[in-house]
Length: 130
Image 1: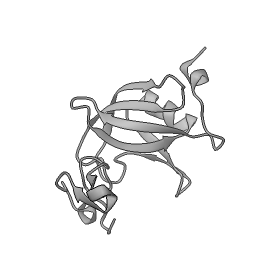
Image 2 (image 1 turned 180 degrees about the horizontal axis):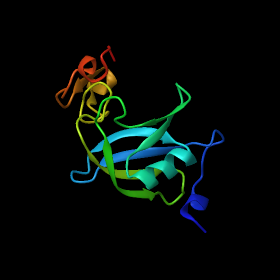
Image 3 (image 1 turned 60 degrees about the horizontal axis):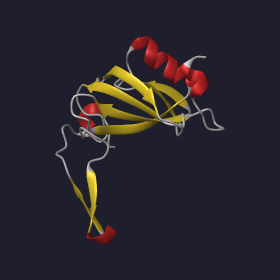
Image 4 (image 1 turned 135 degrees about the vertical axis):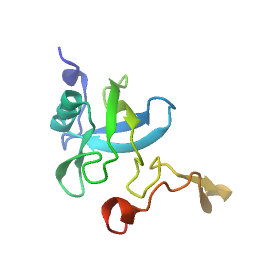
């Protein structure tokens, strides 16, 4: 039995993937994978995902150069979530932050604050506004 047989994809054929910086444990992002993007990730050692909004396959860093080198792929006890540990080059977030989780809730949810500096403007990464 392959590990793919242990995974529980959604009815759309997707599975959530949490991406974590291996050296620090920092959660960088969450994205969706289908079996093809997961197989390509494992084969190439670079993260590949499925965009639900654009309905297309994409590789992290294909336009920004901020690639993720895969160090480990694991899955949870229910088989319905992946954890991908990576070595991140540059910003993981399309808004130019190291992590997509750069905001923390304050004042009982009435406010939030940015918890890390922006590494690069989205204009510099993609040539457009985020």
